[in-house]
Image (cartoon, rainbow, N blue to C red):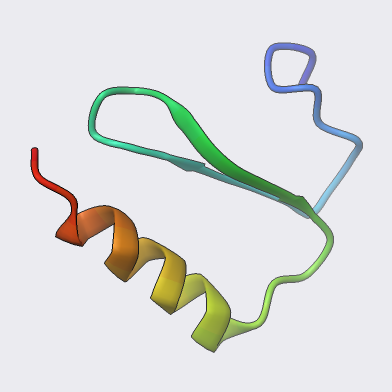
Length: 46
């Protein structure tokens, strides 16, 4: 939890293909928003 400065649970951490933390949210995240954020990361060139 310290490594990513997490406040508690639930916490969402999105990490890209290069291992960089790209998004961090404390609390619940809407499924559609999460899907859009993941799709954006997947669409980036590898």
